[in-house]
Amino acid sequence: MADISKDQMRERLGNLDQIREILVGERIRDYDGRFSRVESELASLRQEMQRRIEELKNVLSADMDAAVDSIEKKLKYLSATADEEIDDIRQQLERTAQNSSNSIAAIDSLLKSQTGALSEQLSETREGLENDIDTLKSQILKELDKRYANLGETKLSRDRMAELLFELCMRIKGTDMVVEQGGNSDNKRSAELLLPEPQNEN
Image 1: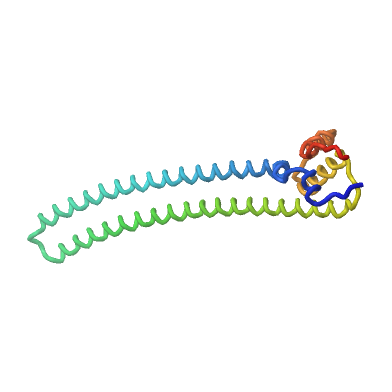
Image 2: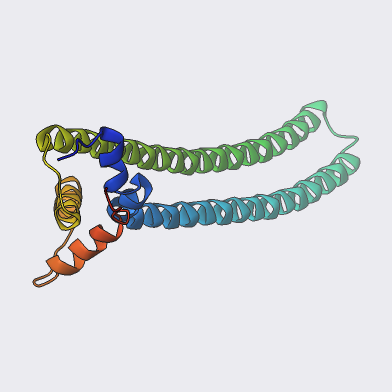
């Protein structure tokens, strides 16, 4: 029997991208959907917060204009009164301006905090997915090397190759793979499709 090199073994077992699609394809699409929803929610939140800020600014601006107008009228009316009363009115105006500024600053801070938290969550989720994929790649390569070492000089048939590939997928995927009764043959046929076509040997 001819010896089988590591490269030949990996080639016969199929493309790693196809194996990864079997193992984590659905999970990747699920994460992509989550990313899209988080990004959409983040954009909606930003728009909503911006709209509320603009509304509040308009309300505060109108209140400020009304307060200033009222105080100016009082100042004109009380121009002949004592300096103490005039100072009190000026302090009232300053407090109104300060309160308005504090309210706007608080809303801006809240917006930054919420959008920052969502951005961080999105980044962590994406990083977690990348780590999962890297781990699966490493597990696949380790299992391939282990299988190759155990095979020795034994030459496998195409059916046996498909069975080993199916078993490898089952072991790596673990409890995430649900096999229905009577579905083993279909899954093995799917694994067999990943193998290259057999070549005639002289």
